[in-house]
Length: 122
Image (tube, rainbow, N blue to C red; front, side, top):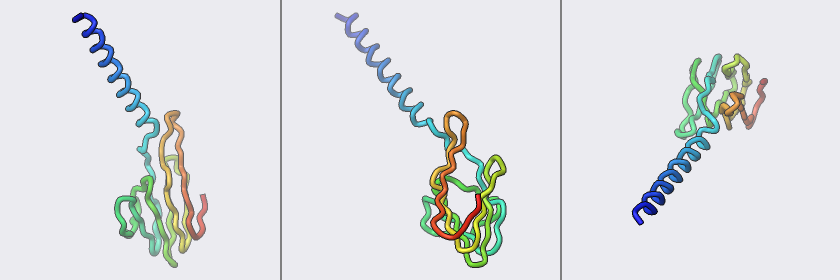
């Protein structure tokens, strides 16, 4: 009887460990470790972080993360630089949201940007 209980206990432990390992690997499917920054700022440029409801003045080298929004005023221009030196440039009176910035398991970069208003070049 004790042998059956031990085997059952070991089986439950293995199942719990495997389910935890599966959950951890699923959660790590995409990495949010990206190097994206404002490389040029001229005039009125502001940034809104997803966890803060107030807009803040943007500075050169401000790191950009998923969920950030960048806005330019009437005299504002800005440039966002990605790891591979590609850029997104915003003109006057523009609003750009960084909807998704992740690394896929294959190493590919996923950039999903939403231009709410204004103009930009990518």
